[in-house]
Image 1 (tube, rainbow, N blue to C red):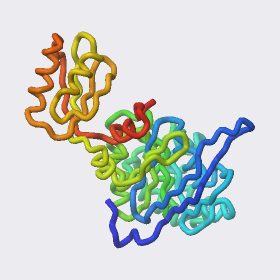
Image 2: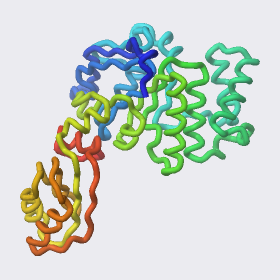
Image 3: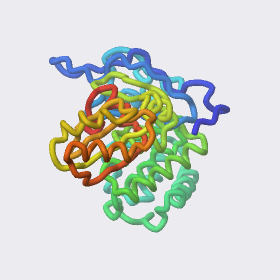
Image 4: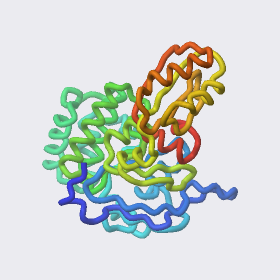
Length: 321
């Protein structure tokens, strides 16, 4: 979490940052205003196509903005892209490891490209391989690495030159749960040492678990920005009950609105989601209301509001659309 002693000034500032593609004028990012504080994990959360990757691309000099400005680590990324690259580390969605090099060489030559001497590059590469539990594969081809191991190597390479900001663009997409959790632990360890991280993701649990603050985006616009806790509490919902039952789910949704404390219902795939604020004996009332409709409860699940709840409140659609 944020250490206030090291977050007194923003390390990323955007002002009306905008990107429009093509003659058709598709606006991928629309007048985005953000400030990311030094030392925090900041999340850009939204469905595919929300503008997260384009935003990260502009902040890392890979995409030229149509208008607006972006300052990263005190450098204007449009005016001085070469200088900006010295202060950032990037892990993109695709595997960008050099297939012609070994695991160790992918790190060593990265250091040399950034002007780090041979002796120091060797020491840093060896240290990072140990830190990321990749030492035994040092001489192996990167083809020998699993997806999770390759992601770890890309993170190690991205922090080799000690960047002020680490950009992770959908870093756990496609990883198995074990590899995803391992990468979460690495991010938390890096952040605990003071590393500022900007994370783009469409996994709500990832943003909730890792981020100090989250900006929720859709269609290139900023919908909300706050801590995960504040965003979830802003819904005014205490509990979400998901009821799977046979029969007419639309009728069940209407019946569940009669449950004390009910604020809204939503029919999902073979279930009804009931959002509740307060209310006593909740499960008993839900089961009673279901059975009064002549329906049999097949499954019932109780959960707290999530960031997906916030997104649905803002847009009316699933976060993973």
